[in-house]
Picture (cartoon, rainbow, N blue to C red):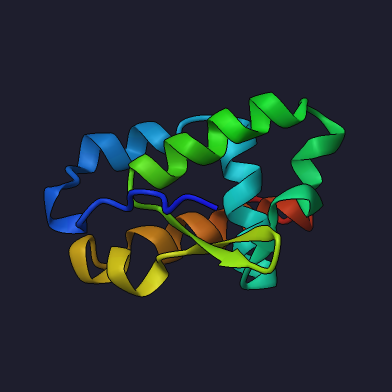
Length: 110
């Protein structure tokens, strides 16, 4: 399995990060990762809404924006949020996004 590039977050600007978060499918992925801690590629809830190739595109956008890290896990790849690194670069941003996503999921107004 070839290694994937993960950007240094000091090179990621706010517009890139927010652009990656500006899609409902990608927000769904972030919500699931925040709740689960990590997800193997074929286990994303978003697969009920989009094809695997479309999901792969969304995961690539999130990885390129520095939002997630992909690591080999046997013959699969595990996806995890880079929450601590993002919080160091953009304090409070990701926790606020995740809190909003989780409150929407349970039907609590944001």
